[in-house]
Amino acid sequence: MDNTTLPGLIGYSLIACCVIMALVWLWSYKIKNAGVVDIFWSYNFPVIAIILYLFAPGFEPRKLLICSMVVVAGLRLGTHLALRVLKHLHEEEPRYAHIRKEWGKNAERKMFGFFQMQAVSNVLLAIPFFIIALNTSPDLSWIEFTGVVLWIISVMGEAIADTQLSNFKRQSANKGKVCDTGLWGYSRHPNYFFEWLMWVSYFVFALGSPYGYLAMISPAIILYLLTKVTGIPTTEAQSLRSKGEAFKKYQDKVSVFVPWFKRNNAHT
Image 1: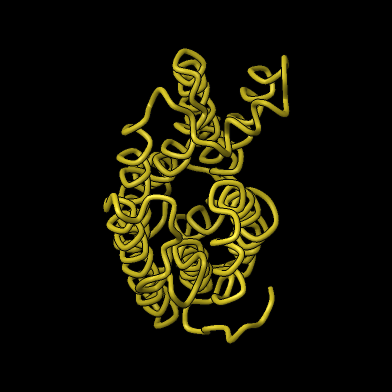
Image 2: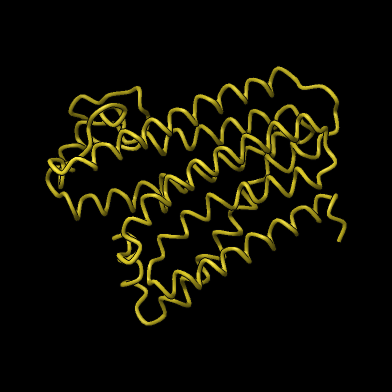
């Protein structure tokens, strides 16, 4: 397998991510905490970026730019999640505990499959990175710089949202309360919004490369996952279980996703 061709780059990236997730599953099996998968889902993107930087035949400055962006974003989010998960490493997050309960006696086997699907999703979502890293054009275009600007906004916005929520939870007086300050007063999920915007920025960056329009699949998948599968639905279901009426009032007051639109007694 030629590691400088698209199939080779995809193959090596997939092998690396699957091996990492298999090892993470073994760890999660030992400590009975599937929450660690979120940490390494984020860290797998820098792994893919390093593979692309080392082996993809694209224009060096372009590769350095996109790979640096992916490494910074992946390490920031992964480390933020690690700090949260490691605080209660031997106490599984409620959403994963709920999934484990639903899966019953087949939970660990299904969890292994879930971890491997996360590895596959890493490679699938990395489509913009492959497209960009294979572009040999010696000129960076304005659309690529537009993608960089959007990326800066998204990473800063997500970091601010994460910090605001962490600071809120750190105060003992807020135990059992719903964070509705800062960006969280305008969106129930500003972190998810900026995470999605980050993938939009990768798509915009990829538009400067041949077949860049194919990169649209990444923000589309992320939007679907966040709004329909593992993001907002599971997070809000857990919040309703743990905070009850307080979170229902918050749902009525604050927009589900877009941070600059504040609702006025409307329903999602």
